[in-house]
Structure formats: structure tokens, C-alpha cells
Image (cartoon, rainbow over all chains, first blue to last red; front, side, top):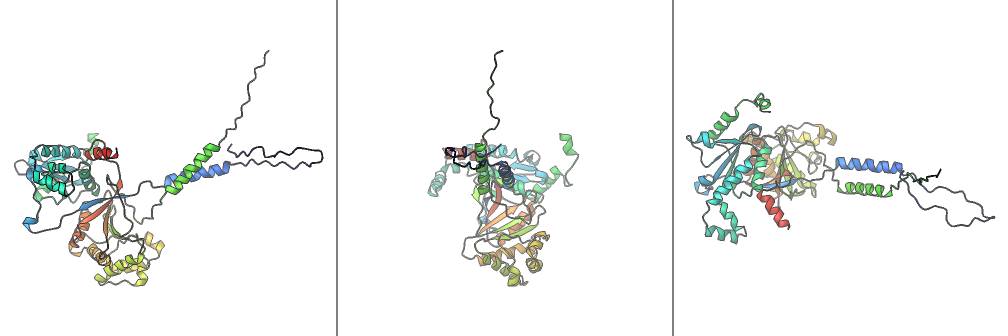
Length: 215
Length: 218
């Protein structure tokens, strides 16, 4: 058992005839209860401790403006619109959505797969980049990476519907950081987009029978 | 017969190093543990790759719980009076004044989730009753009568000139409209920069951020 050994505890006295023998007390202390208690405390602290403290993420929103000239212009060729629907459904389309191309352009995805979509679109926009000296000079003057100019036409529009989960919106914003998307915005979906989302996911509450069938 | 002598070995192992390590771990956990402040409402925040630390001072936190109820709390551990001034100013703006005796029950970090007409009564509750009191959330849904607007306006006037951060802490399953209502209230006050409270997570392997973070370490 756990015990503290402090030598033989006697000392070096010579036993002589006239020396009275002192009663030898053992100095060995039983440490079992202390160790028990020690482990009990360890268990307690392991369970109660919170190792990671919360962090914060920056979000800057543009000022609301009615003036046309103050609005940010987005090139349709470099735009990617991502919409968040109910039950973690993600929808996206590239460029502009018109009545003619709605059926092909409007695609559904998941939070896991959307990263590939973002990366693919970003690569595509970057490949179309024509060296822009003015932009690169400006980036250098501002102390930014001139390579960011390569994606200057790339713009991600995040449009959560009223049924979207907060987590999905944050995940998408996080996805922008992960993939180093320099330009993105949080917007309201258009009515036409809402209709398409509702048509895809249904307006009724989560269709329960569909899920088990997929398994 | 030759006798085989088996050396008698003691079964008593020396457990001292083992105990040493155990207590070392124990002291580590005692030091490293930071107890969660008692939360009236549990909120599960989403994860993000961000690594900025959460400020404990000079900030207000707007929380959304899983039922889309909105709460307001003032993070001013250094100066509790500041928080009480904010409450008084906000209530004053709505012509429902609260007394000093009522605000004295507020401590920085406490979450307020009641409409202004119930604020005085809520603040006057003893501490143990406050914890069990079910708050209905600050009314934000109606954009014409978004009470959060007055809270932020009051905070701005009290914090005038000092740095102030707006923290938004939302629950995983809360719905987007509550978040939007908060953003609207902040925008109405001409505030465009917010901090979203999340739990940390690593950058996913192979992504651009991951590449950048790993190369900068070298």
C-alpha cells in the first residue's frame, strides 16, 4: 500500500545495559485515505473544468443606405449566392438567377459540401483574373496581401431565410474565414428565391418519412 | 533433492512516484479550472475557427436562447455602477423609471430578459428567486417597438467616448429572425461592428486557412 518510508526510524543509539529502551513507534503512516481523497478531487476537477474559453468572431455590417451610388456593386460573373433554409438545408447558385435558368442553376447542398462549392467558384474567378496594377498598388499601400486582388470579383452572398438556424449562418460565416473569402455579405433573400427554397424543401414542417428511407 | 530457492519478493510496491504524479495532476486541474459562471439560461454556442478572446469588460452581451428569447447583459466587472447607470438610463428613456434600490440588485454579467414594464419588479427580486424566475425575453420581433434599441441607446450614452464592444451570443438551434432583429436594433443605433461569441475549433485540414496557419508557425 501507499506509505511513506522514512528510513528505519530508530536512530543510531547503541543499546547498552543501562539504557532504557524507548518504545519504538512506527513512523510509517498509512497514506491510503489521502490518496483516495486525492483521486476523488482529481476526478471532480476533471469533470467540472471547462478547458476552452469562448472566443469571438468579428462581423461587420454595411450601413443601410438608400443612395444608389453608395451600394456595393457585385459582378454577376463572380457572385455566389448561398441560401440557408430549414433543417440545415443549404441552397446555392452562381451568378444571376433568372426564370430561364432557375431549374439548372438553383442547387441544393449541405453545410459539409458547400466548402467545395466555394473553393471551386473561387478558383474559377481567380483563373479569370486579369492583372490589375491599380488594385495591387492599393493593397500594398494598405498593407494587405496583393494576392487578394486575384479574387476581387469574387463575392459571396449569404441569404438566410426566416427558418434558418443560427448555427448554420455562423458556420457559413466561418466558412468565409476558412476559405479566405475577402468579400461577402449577409442579406435577405429575394421573394423569388424564397419561393424556390419553399418549393424544394416544402413549406410543411419537416417531412419525417423521408429521413428513414434514406438510411 | 536439491532445494530450489525462490527469492521471496516483496509485493509491497513503492507507490510514492505514483502518488506524486497524482497530486501533480490534481494541482494542475485546480489551477487550470475556471468555473463556469452560473448561467440563468444555458446557451450552446456554435463553433468557429476564430481565436480572439472574449472581453470581460467594456462590452454588452446580447444573448439568444434556444427558444429565440433575447437577453441583455452588461459586461463591466470593473465598474458595476456603470451597469446600473445603463439600466436606469434605458428605463428612463421608456418612462418607466427604476429606483436605485432596484438597480442595486443587478450585478455585471447578469442577464436581463424582461420587457421594460416588468424590469423594476424583476430587479427587485432576491437573488435566489431571480435564478428561478422565467424571463420572457426582451421584445424584439416587432421592429416598431424593438426594446433592444433603447438598451443599446442607453449603453451608448453611458459609455460615450469609451471603447465598447457588442457581443452577440446565439444558441445553435435559435432561428435567424431573432439574430436579425438584434442586428436591426444595433443598426438603428448606427453600430455596424459586432462580435459573435463562439467556441473555438481548429481550421479544417487542407483548407486555405489551415495552410496559412501552419506555414506561419514554422
